[in-house]
Length: 511
Image (cartoon, rainbow, N blue to C red; front, side, top):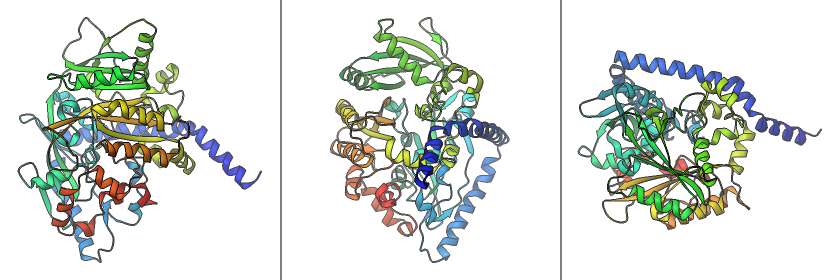
């Protein structure tokens, strides 16, 4: 057997039997980490020790930047958090040549039950927040559904959820940021205090300063979400209903849709309630033995197509609903553990699921990384909701990846990188594309470039956690850099300390 044949065989084994490593090593490691993390965060929050340590940790960030300032300043700055610990599948190659600043800020600092806000550090996760707030009868106004998403990532990048058609993106529920700037000063910004910096921070990707805390809006929480499933058998029907529901004067609290083919999908509308009604059953979708959520949704569509039932109503425990896509990482886990949704596996090992994304990335062989590069799509395209139908046709033509996640959200007319073409706000929709493309002639770069071109021409945006292949000119056409450029010029040492956003997110620059 030649060396090339041996390499090909090894690559095949690593890709096809990765589930063995995941089940035997990563799941137990993930489970132990979750227990330790939950226990540690509970103790810290109950003892109220985090606020006392916060200033000390911020001063340590300042100390590190001052050391850089005293040096030759020939390198840029970035956080020392390794790329494998983030939710993005992008490889943060720039960290190898930048000066790494340790920003170890992982705690919830304060819950203000009177003003309905929570102040927390940037590495606090959505799972950590929802677990802490649930006993208090509170929740974030927008709860991005994956447990491991962090506040910092959702502020510096963005976050969207099924309540975003009311509250907007994650940045729109933040009322205050604390940052350490490139001159090592600490600054607090809000709509009234340093407002230009406040509006420029979201989408800035850590290129204006290091986020050290954020204050976020809360809403009163109830016990269940009453969820209605509305199957649709044409793209035009689903697009029309999604638009109508999100633009109602008094819309449902939660709206999303899953497309299972170009012409079939399920629209879901939900509202918080305290008690179960007589029109549906309780469905604890977050239990370890429960079927993956997207497969339950698909079954409602199948039943409708077979003429069994139309609209179905279920009552889902609130925290289960918030993290409904976590256990299967939307539907990505089926490509790693193909039998992960089998009833026997769920009952025996479901309590270990899901594996930590960070551990999946840390143990990802180079062969798997190459496979993801050439035969996998992880993208979120954000477009005006009236462009949804034509956008789906474009995504189908270039990728043909299903399911597709659809989530409507408001973009408010505010300073910053997102443009609104009319009125005080505009309704957009997040088109989440995660999986293996089946489109004839799919090639990663040209196919993605054509979708990006469609997004730009239709005045949309691309989430920056994934690879973008735009040119600098196209990127600046997609995002409004006016305020961002102004702040980069105003803030002392900012351009010396941090690259532009494009330099951190564009695939072509990083090669």
